[in-house]
Amino acid sequence: MARMPGTAWIGPTPNQRAGGMSEYRGLVLHIQDGTEDGSEAWFKNPESQASAHFLNPKTGGLRQLVDTADRAWTQGAGNAYWISVENEGRGGDALTPSQIENCARLLAWIHRTYGAPLQLTDDPNGAGLGWHGMGGAAWGGHYDCPGKAVLAQRGQILARAQQIINPTTPVQEDDMPLTPADLDAVEARVWGHTETNPDTGQPVYMSAIMAWTDHRHNVLYGQLAGLSAAVKTLAGLVGQGIDTAAVVTAVEQAIAAAVVNVHVDVTGATNPTAPKGA
Ligand SMILES: [Zn+2]
Image (cartoon, rainbow, N blue to C red; front, side, top):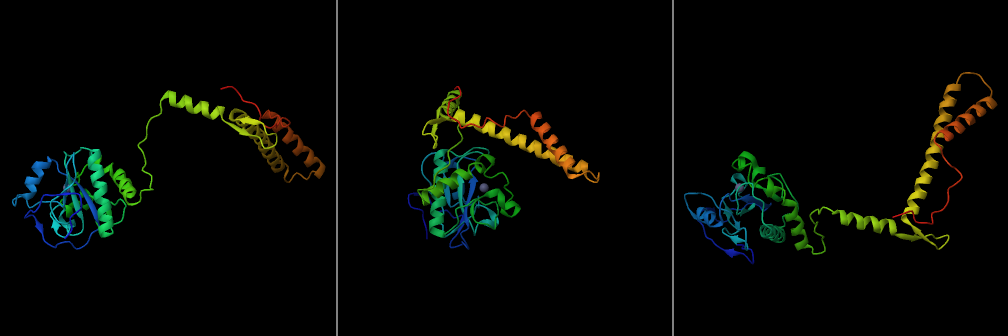
């Protein structure tokens, strides 16, 4: 017998098989497509032949209808292997923050109690946090349960469960769009940021470092252009039977022309010191 601490016990229901669990692979998410009260009444009605281990209302704590030692009638051929939670809401609804927290606590409890892994799964023969539709026809063909909006929240549920198990695990925050003022502040911080030149002990601004890096890039591009011209020239001389001095001269001329063509100043590679604007 197992009832999750902190949940409200609302059983029993006749719609279950006592001691009917073969394995505990993890948690399967469902959407009630109805209200909490209506679903509870339906799951207690012998006519429905349906139930779930847990019900998760839009507000408030988890409610347990079937002991996890017993088999709930929720997802067909998966009933003997998975613990189930029916979330209050209509098909297409997203879970409320309270429902996400409840699902995370339930997943963490299943991990602690039964050793189910903290991971997402789309495989009815896998383990972790699954969903009704993944079982296909064998699970009743409920492909839209719990719906895309809830599926998109599985990562949040998993991350929160991992944090409950290991409180040092950071929870990934939702992406927040940056405002123009945010971007201005970042730009000012980057361009005004200083490092100390180890040779001179003087402050070096990011703008100067960027300019110096640009300069070094141009030098490298020039050297690459020279090498390319040399290779091309050598290839053109193959088999012409000219002497070594003529080959060297031709290659040197090709390199000089290429470097001039990319307008590289190969003499001005100075260390950065001064800020550039901003
Ligand atoms: Zn379902």
